[in-house]
View 1 (cartoon, rainbow, N blue to C red):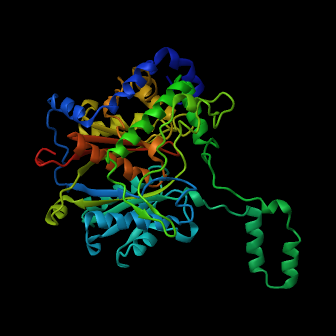
View 2 (cartoon, helix red, strand yellow):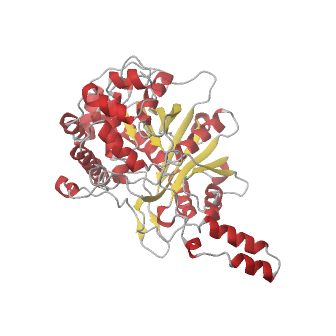
Length: 486
């Protein structure tokens, strides 16, 4: 079957061919609310073969630790800041957490999506603001929602090639103050006025002014290549996979409930306090709001009206925040007395059709990164997937559990396999914790690394979709006292 057929074709086939991810999945989703001790007991009862993910003649690269500012709803306590303020706070928090000497850091890389024009290289400005030497290079990358993942893997490349031993990678996003431009006609007129040399030339240019020149130009919320918003795509995806509004709301409630539990139990240890200038110190995420299904059901569709199923309650919200991680060559980390949290192993970037498969990236990337690492779904102890929308997560779970989808869309003989939901996003996800576009990737990696240590696991897998139909996935191993097989 042609892999380019559109979502209408998928909608025709899905009810008959895909497994039913209805009540069974969502009842199963609530099982992670059990304590971590239960998870440890379950893990201990299974005997797993010890597979090596280390590559010959390639340096072992480790995450020493990572932090993030509290993730806040846009328009709240961070609303008067600039992106470099948040990035600087993340860098300062990382320095305090790890006590790494600033002069040891060879390079700094940050990811961001909506750039502030005054600080286009936000990594450099934040590094200088945090007190790093002006001799420490820094650059900024962008890859939509996986920008900080790109920062991390760029760091991996620098260390693996021997150019660096110590790199700080991170990401930042400030949605409270997005750049709003003059219209193109107004910008052109202003530039022409600046070039005009005589009064007559200026008057001639001004005479062409029209009131519609004053219409502002907002940042694009739709995909440039498809002219469709991600929310609209999520609504179509949910319909194609027959995912109901109730199922999406239940998954969102799961995310908020797990995040609240993790927050109350002090498990979100990557969060560092941030004293906002002129305001109080912020100590925790403020978007975690367990509600009720009755309250969530009252919300109107956010994108496809009046029949859509994607709402504000089952979508990730606009968020301000920053994150940073300390990445080192293993020999450097050990020489400095650090006990790293995880080895960064195999990773994969994958792209697919941005129209009909925009949000299905985890389904495509997961089997590829597992095959590259020589692992199976059964080997993974901790899964952390980016939750852009409830419908997106549930659609990926259905696709991963479908032989039909694997054969007709992925060119595979058999399905990827369903991640056990007792291992899946156990401390909440982007739906509840928030999603600062440029910073989420580092949060995902640190959540998985911290969960592995807490739950006694060995292998973790992170996957995140992004605008443009792109996706990132990485496998890594927890650092234990017995590292010879890692």
